[in-house]
Structure formats: C-alpha cells, structure tokens
Length: 189
Length: 202
Ligand SMILES: [Zn+2]
Image (tube, rainbow over all chains, first blue to last red; front, side, top):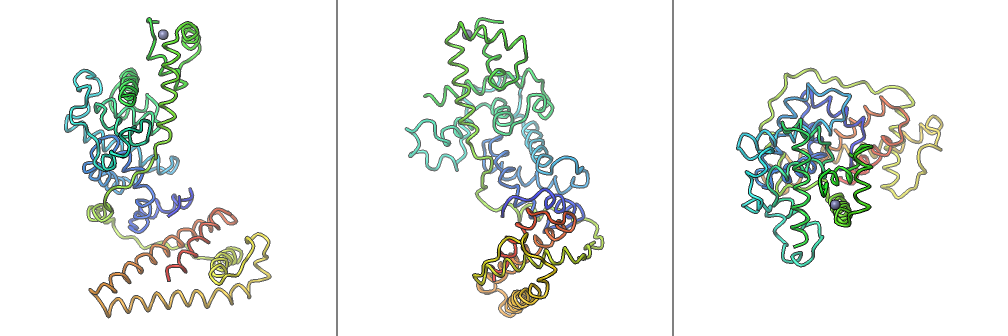
C-alpha cells in the first residue's frame, strides 16, 4: 500500500473519527511500521514494543476526536506514540533522564532485540553496518537511548524532547552528548 | 568555555549553536585537533544514523489485537456524499478506463489529452462491462464462500473478499478526495493504481 495523499489521509481520519473501522485499519497499515520502529528503538524490547504499538493505536482511536486538522495526522500519531512509551517507561521506573549515573553505562541487560541479533554472525566483523548501529543503540542506557532516538532518528528538537519526557533542555542535550560518545565507543570496538 | 567544549561540539554539529558561541567554538577548532576530530566523528555518526530505516516490521500482525480493543463509536448514518458533476464522473470513468485498458494491454496516454466529454460514450461502453465483470466475480466469490464455509478454499476466498472490500474502501475515499479537489493529478494516479489493483485481484 503506497503512501497516502494528504487529502486521502484527512478523509480517512474523518471517517475513522466517526467510527469507520476500515478507514482506521488503513491508517494503521500506513503507519504501523513507523510507530513500531519508534517503540522498539525506545524500549529495545520487541515484545514490549508490540504491546506499546498496539496501545498507541488504541489511544489514537480513543482520541481521534481531539485531533485538529491543522497538524498532519502522522506527526500527531507519532507524538502520541512517544507519549505512550514514555508513560509506560516511567511507570515501570525505566526512564530516569536526570539521573545520568543511576543507569549503568553498560545498560546491563544488553537489550539487543532478538530480531536484530538473528544474523549477528555475518555482521560481527563488519563495523559500520546498520545492524551494528541498531545494536549499539539498543545497548545504550534507557535515558541516553530515548534522547538519541527522539533527536537523531525521529528528528525532535531538544525543547520538544524536554516537554515529552518531562525534563529540561539541558538534560536532553547532556543525554544526547552521552549517547553519541557511548555509540562511537561501541562502534569502534 | 572549558578546555574541550565537547557539548558545544554537539550543538555545533546539529546547527544549534548561535552567533557568539559559534565564533568561540570556531576559534577553538582552529587550535584543537581533538575537537576537530570530534566534529568529524559526530558528522559521520549522524550520516550513519540518517541511513537507518524509519520503519520496521513487527514480527507478527498487530491489527487483530488492536481491533479487539477498539470501543465502537455511536453509529451515525454514514454520510456518503453524492457523486455528481459531469466532469468528475468523466474523470473517474477515465481512471477506471485507464486501469481496464492496461488490463487488456491497450495503451491510453495520461488523461490530460483526452476530452472526457467527447469520449463519454466510448468511456462508458468500455467501462461498464469490466465493472460488471469485477462485480460478478466478487458476487460469485461471496456465494462460493457461503457454500464452502470453513474449508481452505473458503478461507482463501474470504481473504480475497476482504482485500476487495479494502480496495473498494480505498477507491471510495479517493473518489471523495477527487470530489473535493477536482483535477488533482496525484489523486487521479492513486485512483488508477487502486483500480488496477482491483482488477488484478480478480
Ligand atoms: Zn578541543
């Protein structure tokens, strides 16, 4: 299914807001890949990421009525997804952005998603592959990983990240700095 | 500025460093090979990160799980906008025609050169049987599905019917889109694709 045209998406959103499940399913099929990628990169756990991606779409369905047409639907949906993940991480005590030293530098459980681990043999001695980078990101401490994913992959600015994660711009910058240095160290190894 | 202002290097690479701070960092970079390497390394990392795919496929289909948790909304009469306006009708028929011509291996240059009014009869005549064909095939499938409920053939047919209804829903949305934005070539292309998809399903 190709990307949706703006107007097509707007109409699907309107239909879904009125209760049209077929329209909502098309929105789901269009955006599940990105929503899942956000979740799996933020939590580094494919099974939890599946649950969170589902939670995000359920919440989107519940809140479609509050969606205002002046934003693009996808940016509304992706932000909502980040909020779902951040809330869940927080409630489980997994996201402490301001306590840099509290999270082990090693990210203790290596947090490498199995679907990335699968063909690790072939990539082990090939630095700079996408898989090495994905693995290195997954191995970051939660706070540093969250900021790295939101800033460097999803393209949010520090003030947006601070707002979404309930921290300060300074903390966000500090975590990004830390994440990038850790990644460089791990990729050079 | 501290000895090696490495947090400023991050902001610099991100283009977030403003006037004075940027000048001071520039001055430092001229002097400091270590920070220059830092800038290069960060840029390389950013490039590598930019190549990561933004979409990832979950290991299983998550839609059923989502669907089971969706609260139905209070039903309102479906407001299906009436399909009117001779130009729009012609445009949609043209699209369908393009799809059908493709199917029969006949080439039709993009609709812009064709005068829909002039060729309306031809368009209608070509379009009707094919639509009938698709509808009849779909109807056959549905009755087949009822007859052989539970068998693998019925499951396959049921998947096909679901796909067909998804395409019809997509076409429906695109028709509404075209009604709102007549003459939008992008919508026309998408409609054409969906019609091709529809005929290819059958
Ligand atoms: Zn320096």
